[in-house]
Image 1 (cartoon, rainbow, N blue to C red):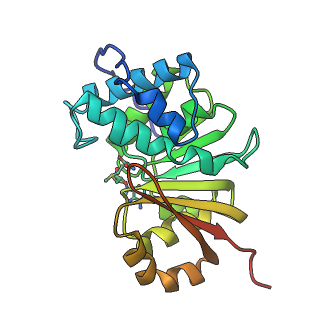
Image 2: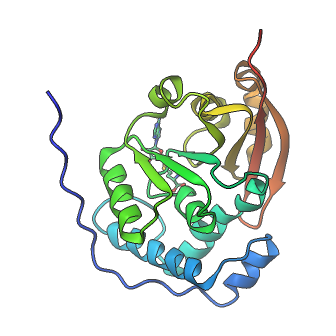
Amino acid sequence: MTKAARPPLPLPISAPLAPPEGFEARLAAIGVRLEPAALATLGDYLARLLAMNEQMNLTAIKDPHEAWERHALDALTLVPLLADLGAGSRLVDVGSGGGLPGIPIAITRPDLRVTLVEATQKKAAFLSAVVAALGLGNVEVRAERAEKLGAGELRGAFDAVTARAVARLNLLVPLTAPFVKAGGLVLLVKGQRADEELAEAKRALAEQRTTHEKTVVTPTGRIVVLRRGPRAG
Ligand SMILES: C[S@@+](CC[C@H](N)C(=O)[O-])C[C@H]1O[C@@H](n2cnc3c(N)ncnc32)[C@H](O)[C@@H]1O
């Protein structure tokens, strides 16, 4: 028997947020430039995220200024690391929650095909609704557990995977690395404890054939950059 399609989640009405003063200069400092239309779409996304957050738990951040800095800017620190990904490359954001960092990346790089994986059905319903409202034709949403998709139909299907605030590295590496092909990038947004978590995750890195390329210090945290090696044998 086929499951009945759920009706689309209605989004509360919200006016797009304007970026705070100096935001574009802060973007330029991390090597990111956004067209005015893309900046407006980002403001529209943040407004919809904060408006829906009053109905469901999507983010602890409620202040618009903080949303620009700790969500949009933080997500966009990943963009320079994706410079080698050509048009049509595939990126998956695991445990996307309210769409971070996947949606700001998809807005900034409309040439990438972005998949958002989120296990909580309600959050995934928000993601589908907001992607449709923003007209992001390069994004698809999968309401599934990452373990299932990464071991199944999406195994090795991506050029890059991102994740933020999902789990410690020793658990996060096995959750994310299976999605990428050999030579693919695993970009994990972390805080001050990145090194400590890396030490704890040594075995998981080896088991997942990933090597630590570098840890990038950004204005908002750390990005642990791993590269997936070829399959043994
Ligand atoms: C703390 S939230 C972070 C959300 C978003 N990445 C951010 O930075 O705002 C963690 C999210 O990961 C999702 N999640 C946790 N484990 C997951 C799994 N195994 N597969 C898919 N999603 C998962 C949760 O449902 C939750 O929405």
